[in-house]
Image 1 (tube, rainbow, N blue to C red):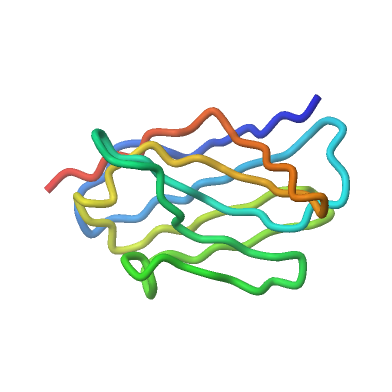
Image 2 (cartoon, rainbow, N blue to C red):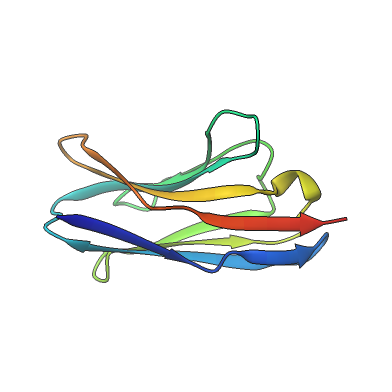
Length: 116
């Protein structure tokens, strides 16, 4: 069984920073893409950032220049450094891991709240 455990969410003022982390454990092999998604109340889940095994990254336009995704393949972890946070970044953030067979795994989600 695969588990993704997220940490680092919380409440921060606009302009502040948070760092999210996600650790994968269990019988998960051949991890390909790791990433973060978010879902705000009343909205669909959306991609925030992804990173491949060779550190190729992709960001949503709304977070480019403010968020940085990174991973440690040996530790099976992915992190998201979020700077210059805005109230519109408020959402539940979900860790996502996809293996080479395109099987996706999701974390339980961590709340990020940015106050104005």
